[in-house]
Length: 185
Ligand code: NB4
Ligand code: NI
Image (cartoon, rainbow, N blue to C red; front, side):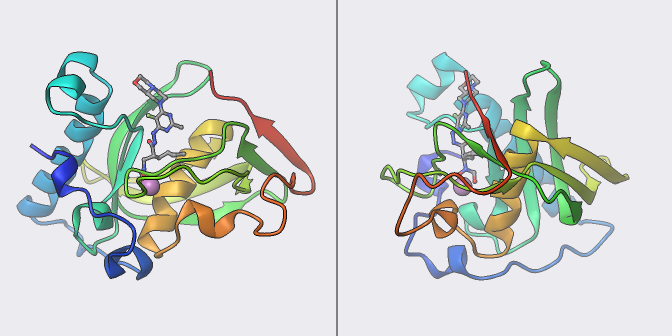
């Protein structure tokens, strides 16, 4: 199982480089790795398991964060309509996005960053993502709000971008134009 010792931390070059596309159909090994990434997120949200294995809670994970420079992401979370997003994706690509922005009013954190970085992270309010899911199906996801934010954070990792790279250096709490806050519980 994946534990925190497997999570690469900032400063490691793999987090600042673009990851490579996964050959489709994915290999058994790629599928196994993606399943392990989803299980890590589920474990991190299970109080007992998280305590036993000292896991930091997460709702998403990208392969470069476990030292694999491949375009694979895993998510496991419920959005505000209690819609569950729990799957893995190969070669996710943002194919369209809104002009409007959003941001988490609580700011963002990252399992690869062992410090708080305050500030708003501007994200597109609505995105369309095309990808191959764990079952090997080609999917087109239309996402907004919290779900759109999570997927953008993970896809950024595939392009070597960290959340704090998007925070306004002069004014960290500058509210982007045409932006609506996304309040987490
Ligand atoms: C990715 C997220 C940072 C902002 C928002 C949030 C948590 C992460 C990083 C957008 C994506 C991990 C991957 C949480 C969390 C809410 C839901 C359900 C019950 C606890 C869980 C806590 F843990 N971020 N951590 N950070 N990343 N919400 N929740 N809760 O997930 O670095 O690249 O279990
Ligand atoms: Ni992250």
